[in-house]
Length: 491
Image (cartoon, rainbow, N blue to C red; front, side, top):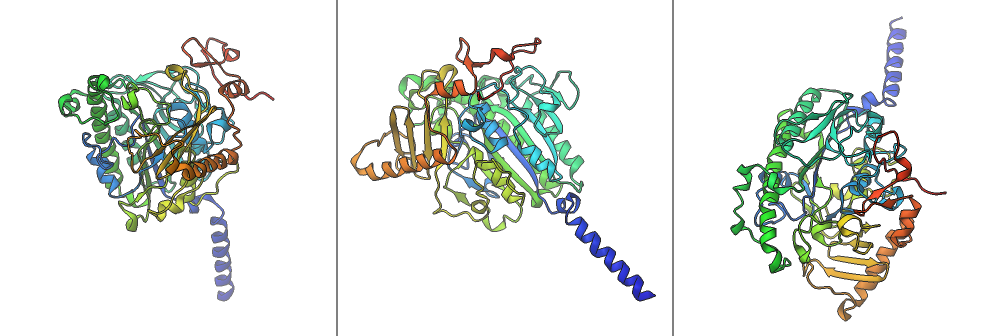
C-alpha cells in the first residue's frame, strides 16, 4: 500500500515537472529582466568612456567597465521614427515603410514588447515614443502601444522642463515634475521596486529625449560645468561654425551629464534591489547629430557621416563576469538589437525579423570579428530634403556610401576617424572598394531592397510631402484627429 502511494506521488511529481516545462511560469524564473535605456541624439563619441575630451559621464563610464562596449554601433536611419520602428520590429525601413518621421507604426507589426509579453514578461514604457503618427501632442492610445502595458509616455516632446505624458489608461495630459530625465527615472525606479520580487521577468524601455535640442534648456548647474572657451572642437568643424558649435555644445554636454546622472539612479536601484545579476541592461541612442562636422550646422542628422549615424551601445547581461569592460569593434545596426536580445534570453526569433542575432558576439567579444552593418536614408526630408538618398555599410574599419548616381564616399575610419579624406577611386583602395561594394549589394539583396530612387518608395507606401518637406497622408485626415500617417503599400 505504501509502495503504491509513493509510486503515485512520484508519478504526480513527474507530471507536474513535464507540465511546468511547458508553461511560462516556471520558464520565467530563469529569464533575465531587460532594462533598455534609449536616449535621443546622443552621438557615439560623446561619452567619457568613448574618449570625448569634454563631456563628463561618470555613471556611464562605470557601466562601461561592467558591460560590453560596441564602439561601431550605428543607427539604421539616423532620425527618430525610423530608428525606433527598426528597434521594435527588427526590420529595415524599406520593409516596414517606416523611413520618415511622424508616421504610424501599424499595429499589425510584431514588436519587441509583444514578443517578450508572450514569454511571460511584464512590459513597461516611459518617455518619447514617436511612432504613433496621430500628432505629437495626442495620446498614444493603449491599443497602439505595441504590447507595452505599464505606460507613462508621450508621442514627442522636447520641452524638458515641462514635458507632457499620458499615464496608462488615463486620457488626461499630465506633466513631469521638473527636468524630465530625473522625473522619468524616478518613476522607473519605483517600478523596479514594485516588481523586484515578482516571479515574472520584466521588460522596461526608458526613452529619454535628451540630449536632443533645445540645448539651452539644460539645467544651469550642468551648463556651468562646460565653459564655452574651454571646449575642444573636432578638427572637421570649419572656422565659421565654431562659435555656434561652442554655444550648442555647452547645452548639449550639460544635457548629457544631467542624463548620465539620471541613468545612474536607475543603475544604482538595480543593484540596490539585487537585480543586477539577472538583468540585461542596454544604453544606446536613436542617432547622433552633425554639430558642425563637415560644415553641417548643429541639429542636422539623416546623413551617413559618423557624427550622425554612430551611437553609443553598452550592454551588460547576466554572467558577464569574464567579459566586463570588453569592446567589440564589429558594428551593430538597429535591426540587430531585437534578435540579439532574443538570443540572450533564449527566445525563438519570429519569422520576418531581418536583423541578425549577434548574441554570441556579445557573450564572446572577439576583437578580430567584423561584419557589415547596413545604414540607409530612403527619402531625406525636412531640412535634408535636398540631400541625396543613400545606402551605406559600416565595417569596423571602413564606411562606404552609395547614392543612386553611384559610389560617393569611402573612409578609412581607423586612419581617419573624422572622415576628412574621401578615398573613393583611389588606387590604393581599389580592391577594398570593390569588396565593400559587394558587401553592400549582399546586404541589400538579403532584405530585398533594389535601391531605387526615393519616388519609388514614396509611391509604394502612399506618402506625399507638405510644404516643409515632411510626410503627410491626406487619406487619413478625418474625424478631427489630425494627420494619421500610416504606411500602406499599394498592391
